[in-house]
Amino acid sequence: MHVSIGKTVEFSETDGKLRASYHYDDPFKSFFRGLCTPKGCDVVAPPPANHPHHKGLQFGLCLSDANFWEEDLANEPQDRKLPIGKQTGKLQLLPAGEGVGFSQEVVWQTAEVCSFHETRKISVNEAPGAYVWHWRTTLTAARNVEIITSVWPGPGYCGLGLRLARDLFGDGKISPPGTQSGSIPTDVSFQGKGAEVRFEQDAKQANVLFVSFYGPGDGFAFMSLGPTNRAPRALKKGESLDGTYVVTVADC
Image (tube, helix red, strand yellow):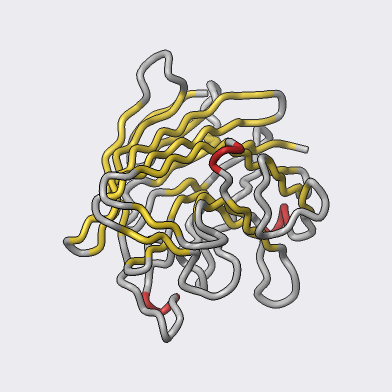
């Protein structure tokens, strides 16, 4: 696998076939789109009109006084209109010996108020029939903050997550069978037609799963692991929150 930085960070095979694009100049948050299996199946759904903030494989959170997940007041409840935050930051390729990927220094802020400084490192390695992505993050609070589950009632969906392509995962299933939102898995996979996405985490960080499935109407398949999907979490200025995730995108 080869990585290069242009308008996006592009990961490609030695034959030039593009396998992933990381969009880092988005005005709200960085994300992967065009996240493909070795056979070329793109597992990410494009953002629909009613959920434009479902950009791709992305990392975002919501605070009690700022929203770093939704990207427009129209996507928030009428009784909870929080200021919309933005993630901005420069990146560089990882040095030789640290893997195929990049590091990114991300500032999370609304207007002139900074909430977090983040160090993010993303790399990939190849396995039989799969690409294995390692997403590591350290969020350091720039002020006293309270991270909440989401602006909407019900189970939280913020954290590291993605909306899965309908053509591949319209009839998808979860493994282990019966795994539901609110559980704390060390690994969970969403299996579709010819493709599979697996999330793994360090057991100690105990991020909570959110998962949904395609169905009638506006149903959609989404999976995420978040640090606050059961209850809010407070961080004092200078405290850090670490996350280590492994996302495997495989042919099946």
